[in-house]
Image (cartoon, rainbow, N blue to C red; front, side, top):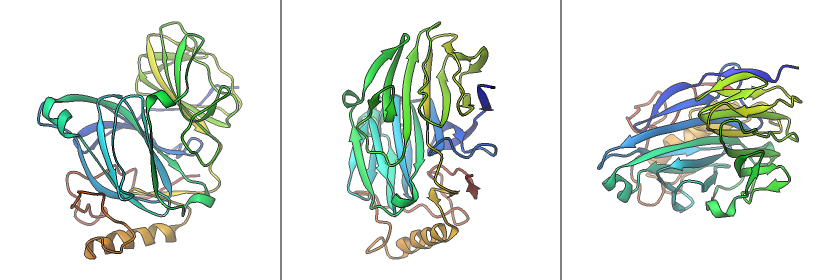
Length: 314
């Protein structure tokens, strides 16, 4: 059995003034488990006075996971949550039937200058939770299970792996791990999840003798049990879980099981601007006043990530 089903070479995108490498979705692989979006952010160095500004934008049908290696980011959303995220912690925002949020460099980091480096992912919600009310949860690094296996230091961000469970509420079988391995160390893979992928943040690894370089994602064949070894000091992210419970379509920041739901979200977002967000499906986060138009309408420079105009998962 071949260990690697597909090797993904991410493409670069500019988001809010910072370069990201997008590993998911791609034409040949729309999802790994419930993960439908995977952006490696930076590392980007900002001089004093500079930073990122991703203005208020809407989501449906997904949960966002922001995880940093370096730097910080201020999150605000329409549930009223306002929280700075720093390395090792987790921001978990459940969009459900609809949420609006912004991501910006905080005042102190903007004043002093900083390096921003991390990963942002989207997890598609199962059908039973697509219309859940929106919510936000922050989990500090100290609350996440941290352990060492085969010489690799690991932190469990989401779900279950190696007999451990993360405190973040999840909606389907899932795992998401941050691993740091010195050269020559083995990197274990959880064997109890159907779909799995490994992304190399830095360094390089061998998977059954095949070199996987920095910035590449290897999607593993279901049931494979390959040997993974750090070729050099490496930082990797491991993710996956059970396959999605049906087809999903991604359009802009919307994930849904039906075209009709996405069309309704488009109408709601346009209507929210006309109504100045009063009694609308999409409210503004506290302190925010801008409104980013839909793709095809006027698109300003601080627009949020756009996976594609029409990206169905299988």
